[in-house]
Amino acid sequence: MSGTGSLTRSPIAAEAAPLSLCAREPHVPADRLVAEMVPPPRFDSVRFGTYIPDPNQPSQSEAVRVLEGFAAGLGPVPGTGRRGFFGFGRAKAPKPPAGPRGVYLDGGYGVGKTHLLASLWHATPAEPALKAFGTFVELTNLVGALGFQQTVQTLSSHRLLCIDEFELDDPGDTVLVSTLLGKLVDAGVALAATSNTLPGKLGEGRFAAADFLREIQGLSAHFRTLRIDGEDYRHRGLPEAPAPYSDEEVTRTAHATEGASLDDFPQLLEHLARVHPSRYGALTDGLKAVCLTDVQPIPDQSTALRLVVLADRLYDREVPVLASGLPFDQLFSEEMLKGGYRKKYFRAISRLTALARDAQRLTEPQ
Image (cartoon, rainbow, N blue to C red; front, side, top):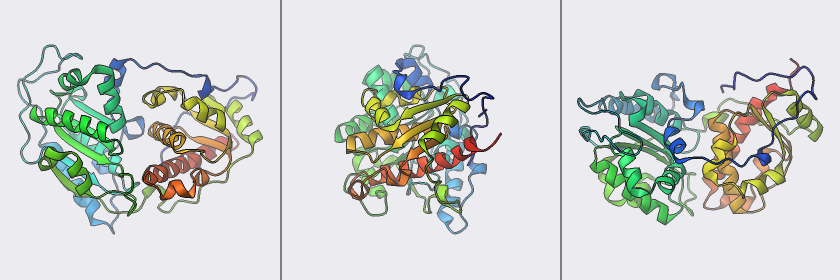
């Protein structure tokens, strides 16, 4: 687990008050949504060579081999160039790559799908402006900000669009994105995706590729499915999640850590309800650590899903989380963990637990 690499402790604990997530109400312009469609900071340096396949899971090595070949087939096309943000100066449509124009990474949480998806983005031989990487939610937010036609124009000269955590929970959003992808495939854009579980799909904590291919309807022929088996790497050989700290220790650490925020957990949950999830990334701008007091069980599913998004953004940015109250594996009720969104909740537990381990260094003597 890599850390932030820039955490420092103030010599005087009371020298400066910590930041507060609850005091932030970010507004994100549309051009930032486009510019930020790159792998998150946690995946800046990942490559196929840094992915360590489990020797007991040959599908992992096979996925690396196939994706390396897929990336190699997406080289730049002579005569194409960068387009303006709003599609002016449109370049010649790229030549469609040979074979399937899409790959779908099918596997449970924590097997490294995002690592591989980001590695594909980095390995594709095209300038960053001609590659896009984002979650399904970020893609729907982009459509909301730019409008459907403008989004098509903005992305249609790209060589590659990577969609992490493709969600099939909302039929309307699924149809919207499926239609968008159809337009992009027609323009020669290559696609790569991972996905989340459907409500009611309990099984292995993931849905089978057949569900994804059915929901994207006419695009299914463009996707090659890569199944990636394995256990959650975040818990492979790692110790159990650290026990929560006291309110006093969390508060003291927040005051002693440069760039840390300090918030009461129930108040933070209320604040998240007033901030659109598309802004949760901006909500964490500049943070070096998040300190939370009085962590309690999540009261309802809407609140739980908002926390999942925040956990994803914190994990992407490698922001350690120090907390008091309940341990993170007790955030969600048994009913939630057996319901249709169980995969999202388990992913949030896994990621918050990893960030809690990262936060242990904050309490160590400097």
